[in-house]
Each structure stands twice: as C-alpha cells, then as structure tokens.
Length: 172
Image (cartoon, rainbow, N blue to C red):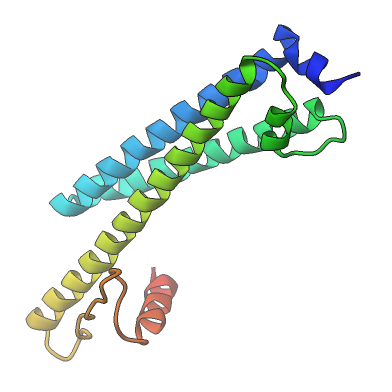
C-alpha cells in the first residue's frame, strides 16, 4: 500500500495528529510543573519541592510513554517500519503535511524550553544545597564544608563537587 494514500486516509492520520496534540499538552504540563518547582525553590518550601519532584518524575514517565507510542505509530505507518516522523511527514502530499510539521515544531520547542527550565532549576538546587551547607558551617564550624563558588553557567567552580554529591547521594 502506498504510504501517501494510507496517511491521507483520515482514519489513519487522525490518531497520529491526536497523539502529537496530547504530547504537546503533556509538555505544557511539564513546563507548568517546572515553573512551580522553581517558585518552590525560591520560596524554600521543602514540602512543596519534594511533592513537585515526585510530580515531575511521574510526568516525565508519562511523556516517555507518549514518545514511545508516537514512535510505534510512525513505524506502523511508514513503509519500511522506520520511526522518523520527519521522513513520514515529508512523504505526505497534502495540506495535512503542514499541520504535522507545525505539531512537530511545537513539540521540539517545548522540549527545548523544558530542558532550559530544568537546567535553571538544577542550578537553583545546587545553590540551595550550598546555602544549607554554609548555614550548617556557620552554626557548627568544623562540621560542614565550605560552599562552592560558581562559574557563569551556574555550575560549581571546584572539582570536589562530584565527590560531595556522591557522598550526599550515599547518605540520603
């Protein structure tokens, strides 16, 4: 069966379009959760931070399921079982092609925005951890390590950071 004819049958392309729309909604929800996480970090609300961490992790698993479902669906619609949605979209010869391209563009934009927000939140986490360590150092000199200095990208400037993070992870 010709792929173009198959995808142009409304019954075949509509589930893929709906899946892409659902994926967009899921990424929007993830951005909302990450923004809430950022606010909780700034407000230093520990209970909300922990709650949002769980929600973000659950939602990331949900997004992974959408991604896997999309790949399966694209593979089923593609002649050779290939899982590239861009190759599939390029084979569409109709007005639907632009709709699919725009849905994919929006998903990619939301992925980039989510990654950016996640990077900012990770920087806030690191700084909050170091502030806590500094507070402990002031309250109990000799018990806590000195806080890190930061580079422009928000990462710690010293090499001991990985050792300290590994220690925190082992003791948690």
